[in-house]
Amino acid sequence: MITATYDRIWRIVRRIPRGRVATYGQIARMVRVGPRQVGYALHNVPHGMELPWHRVINSQGRVSLPRAGGYERQKALLLKEGIRFNREKVDLQRYQWRTRVSSSSARP
DNA sequence: AGGTTGACAAAGG
DNA sequence: GCCTTTGCCAACC
Image 1 (spheres, rainbow, N blue to C red):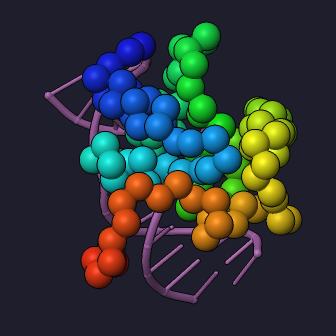
Image 2 (image 1 turned 120 degrees about the horizontal axis):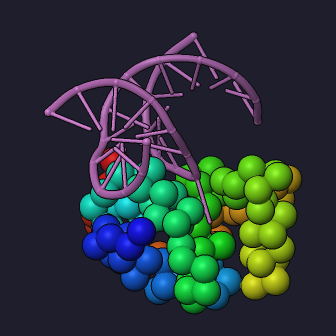
């Protein structure tokens, strides 16, 4: 099912550059919804839609898919873009997509 | 109309 | 690090 909420989420996900990752929470804050909605939206991506869904991972830098449900596939797509894993984790400091550059404002 | 459900996050033990 | 709350909120029974 396609909704306005999914649409807003997908629109942001499409902007994640190759070789970078974003977290569910990061997308959620941009769209102003709960982080779980982001996971829900990605789970329901229509087949055939062009979307770099694999660039979205959880706040700990880990692929948030079950081992038996696409985990390796997502990891492979990320590896192909040059993202490296260290014990199943991505270094967010290094690979996270940063949109706003703030010199003085930081969020809690 | 109301309870359940997540590809989550943050904080605590 | 791992596991367990607790908060979250649109979608889906």
